[in-house]
Image 1 (cartoon, rainbow, N blue to C red):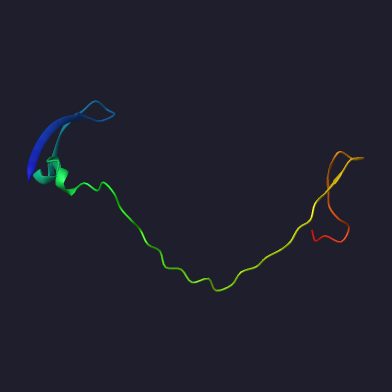
Image 2 (cartoon, helix red, strand yellow):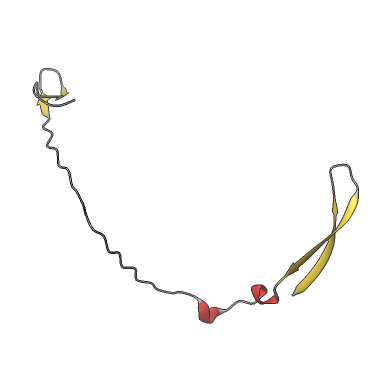
Length: 73
């Protein structure tokens, strides 16, 4: 473990000593453990599927897409 201390001031202006300890290994870079490429595989099972057909009609008179009269909202 690597332990170091530093002084910190609170909002009142009082100074306090703060001590932090961290594992030394976290400071050492380990290039051999880097991941340069990875492949992921996913297994899925589709239980249900829903398909809905929607038709759109463009009206030249109105200048926009209109919905057919029998279409669902």
